[in-house]
Length: 278
Ligand SMILES: [Fe+2]
Ligand SMILES: [Fe+2]
Image (cartoon, rainbow, N blue to C red):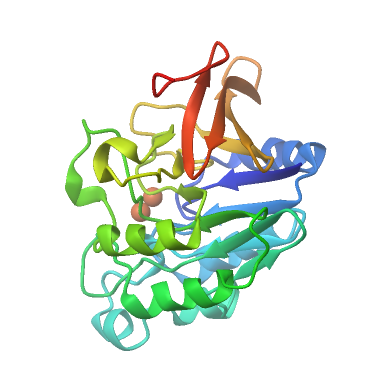
């Protein structure tokens, strides 16, 4: 089994400072195999915000798979936005925009969906999908394949479709061919876990989608600060959601959602039966 800590939307520049030390200590206690950060490390892509993010990330265990979010591209400086959109991200966080971690049980791939041309929408392109194909080709079939993006590929149907990453259907077709199992993302500042069967209706394929809320931002959109712990086995994934308890001044486990794989279809596991109706 492998354990991932999935953090998102840190938003340095607008963080609730009291959360940083307890979160750091808890992540060490969980002792994950990989720490994932699914974008929006800063509020306004300022150097000092990236410096603070870097300093805090340095206190967390590794390896770390990090991707940028729309807030990590300068919004107000037009020169930076269009000519050097991710210069600061690359300087302070990582210059690797296709980060990958692979061991005998999991492959975790980071994909940048942040773009200069849109205010907050995300996009994935064919070149990135072909990099994913290359990175996953040749891996043994039993390795669980996990993709990390800032913008989500799927959300509950009650959400606005505009929040999904552009060209998601094109990417999903490739994900089905590559046997991608789990999609980790953020951006919404709300938590969610489910599968892609309803939106994409692909035969014999449904990925598990896991949204993390904001771990440390003061803009919670009605939810407390939260993060996920994802425990991964070849046929089973468990998603633990940890939320901030203002009374106890600590993150505590609020919910556990198990998912099972049957063929290439991941479904919620309830009472020993597949939620899909099997
Ligand atoms: Fe965000
Ligand atoms: Fe975002």
